[in-house]
Amino acid sequence: MGAPDLKLWLHSWSCFEEISVKITDAEVFVTCPGRNFVTLKISTDEGVYGLGDATLNGRELAVASYLSDHLIPCLIGRDPFQTEDVWQYLYRGAYWRRGPVTMTAIAAVDMALWDIKGKALKTPVYNLLGGQSRTGVMVYGHANGRDIEETAEEVAKYQELGYLAIRAQSGIPGLPSTYGVAKDKLYYEPAEKGLPPENAWSTEKYLLHVPKLFEALRLKFGDDLHLLHDVHHRLTPIEAARLGKSLEPYHLFWLEDAVTAELQEGFRIIRQHTTTPLAVGEVFNSIWDAHILIQEQLIDYLRMTVVHGGGLTHLKKIAALAEIYHVRTGCHGATDLSPVAMAAALHFDISVNNFGIQEYMRHTKETDEVFPHSYSFKGGYLHPGDAPGLGVDYDEKLADKFPYERAYLPVNRKLDGTMFNW
Ligand code: CS2
Ligand code: MG
Image (cartoon, rainbow, N blue to C red; front, side):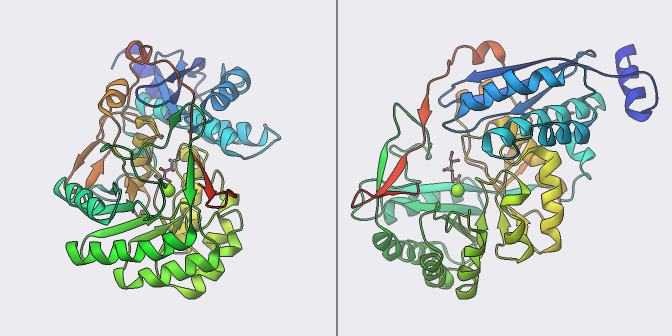
């Protein structure tokens, strides 16, 4: 063990030594290898650096500025091992608390500090979070098609790849476009260059179609395959109750984002009418978005993720509360969360007891080249690997070849033009 390693090792085991590791610099990178990602890199006086994902799809530069203009000046000189105090400082010290931009920026710092801690202690971060509670992290893939037949073909492809759980989204007859259905054969990528594209929506057409989709999938694939569906915030509680009831014969693994969850109590109505498991929370950014849902057991899976939910430090606490109320985790993992967030999520997933499932939408080849990582997929499971820290890196030179390009999430209007939820 060389001198710097020894210094770090001593620091990590004896917090009263005058030896101390210090944050010396932090940089924010924005790159667009097919889609935009924001990455924070925190460097220390011992040459160890940590990475954090700071990507907020469609609002990337807001987080980049929050980090560069407001948080980074407060980090220089701090001890990266003090993850709890830094988190509290950035959360309480903001005065203007919570919100997706603030909590994504705090999450990026938190991920980077845990990465530094793991690297300094030469251990994967999961060993600092309680160790491995399971041999692998069950994931679900995204199958989608323009109609039931095409969707079923895509489900079969994911089953071929070894997935044990597959989300199915299909076009809705009579609607020109809808959430979750890719334009080409690539998996669905929710970010479009230029101004926000407009989708058209009909609740009635949707409610009539989705039960037919899952009846067909159960007929074709049988009962063992875990099937999931994302409503994507587009129903009212009683409509969601109707859909949940109509899907009970097809026993979904979960029905996601049945309604927008600003009104947490709205889930009481859904719960009264259906036993279909409910998942919500990818847009949540703190425990305050979910504490009623958890404590009243109104949901079965919480979708909050490391990058938008305040980082590992906050998500660990939320998972501990959820465990008391039989709520399991189901972290968001779409392509707009970078491999840094995926790596951090896997360290969280493999360690918490009340793990449910991890979304794994797969990134493009060019994204994986910008973010080389140690996590790997096998037989329907991901494993974070045993590299120290989070096990992911960032190729700055390659990333520079992909400059930022403004992109937006679509918007959704009802057939009469009324602005609605996408
Ligand atoms: C979706 C996402 O993965 C999911 O469950 O809800 O595709 C979501 O639309 C995007 O992450 C938004 O950026
Ligand atoms: Mg979703």
